[in-house]
Amino acid sequence: MSKVWFTTGSSRGFGHQFAEAALQRGDKGAITARNTKALADPNTLVSSWSRNSCSPRSSTAGTSEALSPEVSGFGIKVTMIEPGGLATDLASSAVFTAHGQDAYGPLYASLNGLGASAQMPGPEGVGGATLQIVDAGEPPLRVFFGEEPSQWVPAVYQQRLDEWAEWAHVSKAAEDK
View 1 (cartoon, rainbow, N blue to C red):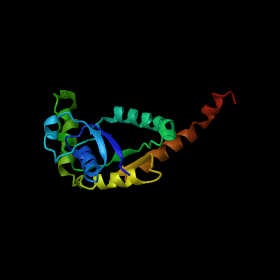
View 2: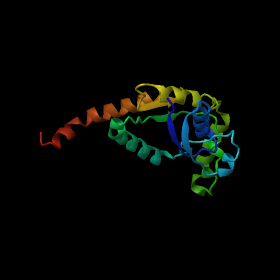
View 3: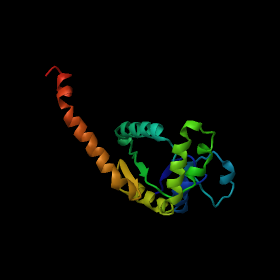
View 4: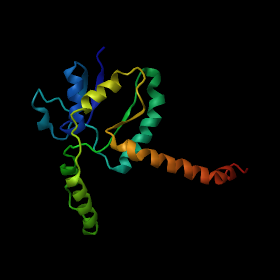
């Protein structure tokens, strides 16, 4: 059964991989891009996850978590793909080439140095991995792409659990207990 996709930011990177995989197998979709010239080639069927900073990404995650149960009754599945480091042109995109502030110079230099020395896998497997999720009877609400997040995210969640436990007495006090 053919699926219908709505994918944004389709001119390169993950979005390109998502759309290319979906359209090559006969799915349909609405595909958008800032750089519409990249969509001129009919063999280049492009879409892309929004290249978000942490704040909008966190907002998107919250919205997706709230949206999932709201639309499930209509047979719509929501999955947040949370990528680790994959070699795309994200760092060189126009989003990050705006004029920086001098105060952040050392931070930019440090991050550029890390990126230059990192050996990251390419995004070529993203399309096939996405199709596995789309074709699953019960796809996950969240999934990592790449192994990197699974190395540090469990510690972040454990820190949250520990902090909630440490402050449980305040939670109870809020209920006048």
